[in-house]
Length: 502
Image 1 (cartoon, helix red, strand yellow):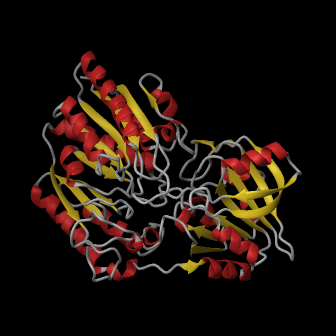
Image 2 (tube, rainbow, N blue to C red; image 1 turned 180 degrees about the horizontal axis):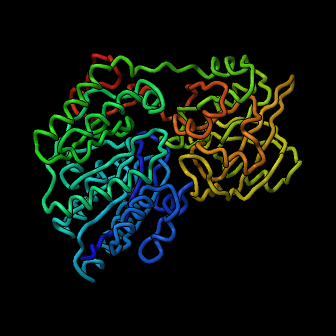
Image 3 (cartoon, one colour; image 1 turned 120 degrees about the horizontal axis):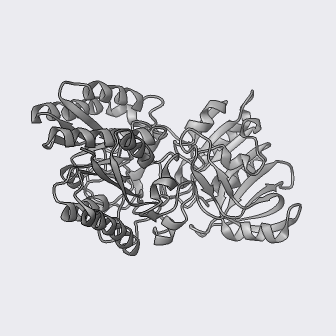
């Protein structure tokens, strides 16, 4: 018998304290990902991209299933999703699901979710979406893929038959996570009954800078996850690192296991929780100030660029990509051969396009989100429409559209040579194609400042002479404990090795 499966998705990572909310239009014009779409044609748009649903689609087609498209949408991380956007996109998914059920029974549902979305009226946005899907589809088997920055909640675990987060940060295995969630769906259908499940939360935040799976302290945790996930009877051990900027009770590190028996599931989650707790001290990661980061980078000698991660204005964590703290420090210290990727400032990009290549003009650059622009005099080196295709390990094949872009040179009196890529739509600096499309060869730069926390490592670390993580002003604070949380659960500690609890 041919299985009939429905596939869709809704992805957002929400920063409760970010300067800008997430609007419906942000799902229509996402940087570096396909736009919101529904129904016929959805699979053709997503096939061949790096999104998880593309992997699920490939796996389902290989199994010979008949596939029904729902809706799929992504927006770059920012403030909470406005109710209008949540209601419209969840309604799209539910309407397509209703039409699918009108046409005949479904054997299963797969949803491509992030897991760290907060809507204005629903702090656990994915839990609410799953409630609505369950209200329509009943007990039809349902699995989900998740970003490991998911703030995993009891509602998500209860309402999904199984969940599978990515295993990597930078996220280079997104399609594989979707494929794994689809295999779990097929296994759940074949077994004819739900898996046993177990859930645990960790009682301290792990900062983003300590979450990279390419190195300790997180690499050994993923190795232990793999070992525990291969235990007898365990179908999946999903580990979520948490996104420590969402102000609601279930924010933080958590894991869920799905297995043949409750004992097997409980052993898996408790084993991983204990492993993490025993290594708590290793997750306290040092970060340089902007001044020290630039000074250190300028001393670097040898082949390849020194990469400075502007972690606190990471567009992938809710930053607007427009703060100028590191740029100002490069100028102050008269840095040579430095490139800043990127400053999200549509007004300055438009001014550069109006002036034309070769023009010299004054700009009030960046600072639209924090009210602190940098006054500069710049020469316009290159103008583009901002349209390109990503090529790096995370996004290969994804469409990039940053709107009108400009490469400018800022040469202050007394020396220095700093170039800045100015864009009209925000995107995390995670792919060399962003720079190449304005004529910059990243490997030939002396210093690269990237608006990113960890994702840049997938494409830029292989060419880097050195990587420095810097804390310049921005909303994606390296230490979440400084944020004015009001709704976290009692007992949750905001730093590793911090005895103070909420």
